[in-house]
Image (cartoon, rainbow, N blue to C red; front, side, top):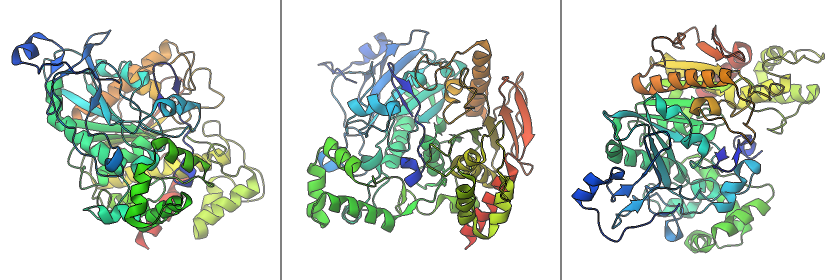
Length: 544
């Protein structure tokens, strides 16, 4: 998803893999900052690359926007592991957002980001609730959604809400997207010291984590208490970081909203390389190093235009590169070898509908799709959706039509449930939620993908597709959810005195629902019928 201060829209995640497609300025001061200046200027902060000057927040605290954490990944650095930002001379003014990362227009939700996006985009933002901090604050590092193809960390939704008022320091991160962040090719693998390619966007996130650990104490944050959290593709990436040996020791807790690391299996490196070769061939460049040189000489706009004009349009996402990601993440979670940290995860009740994911909706076509996917488990799966015979199943008031249930279960809900179940079985603290509170004025469509974001960040947009006629009930629900989220960041448990109890997931698969009336409802075994079949099928595929 992507927002900026003038446009606020949510990405209707067009599917993962093929489904994923269908699912700023810095002003250097001439002289170096002296120690006296650092002490006299309340918003001047040292970093490993040089001093930054932030600005006061209207409601108190301070913010530091558009901080470069890596060298611009342009020219010969395109499609390479990110390098730490070079030290600068003078003081860098960090008072406005940096550019979003280059991306295609995928709809109104990211149109603004696409129009102003650049390859020189590796910036992060730091928001502090008080300045200066009296004691080190827990750090929450946000990874934005957008199918790993679009979106930006630079948004009023993330920056101007009330989340940080609950006693945390917030960091939001830009990372390379789409063809710039996940393009794999044999020539790239050949030049890499790690013999792999793709996953540059994940490497950006890992470098940002290192930057935070090295610098966040100067902003009042605790470098030893970092929670990575994200929604949609940001949730997928959060879980992937839990499986990577390069990152899983860099943060203390994780929150995964509306996606799992294995919503679809990641492409093996060889498959991703062939996709990259096919795209390069469509541009009529030579194979090998010479072709790669020519690809690096194309402008970002030329690459994006070529990608958009190719039919079907190629998707570039995370792969099993053997370095950042060494094996299928489902296997990692099934073995209990992911990061040994508390996990809070959940989904919305409607998530992604069949129409959004371009899945069949007619009963017979839906039956065939489900049967083809589940094979020998098809009878149990069809029964779970009320499709065991030729009669047309009725819609569920909370989850929608059978087609919409299937779409949300397959891509988001059941993978998230399976991932959380494995994490809990490994004896790591695990908490699940379901967000079933539709945005006011959008009750007919239910709590769809992204509708939880105003409540997580305490920001209520007046336009865009997560805008609504918010009331005191919504403000109270947001305060409740922000309390849970920040309690988790502080202690590893969402619970505290005065809040409804949120039990651990455990063998009973306990979870809480944020209901339409704003109340917290304790329940067990979310969608256990269809998701039970999904888990059985997934386990069988991992074993075999």
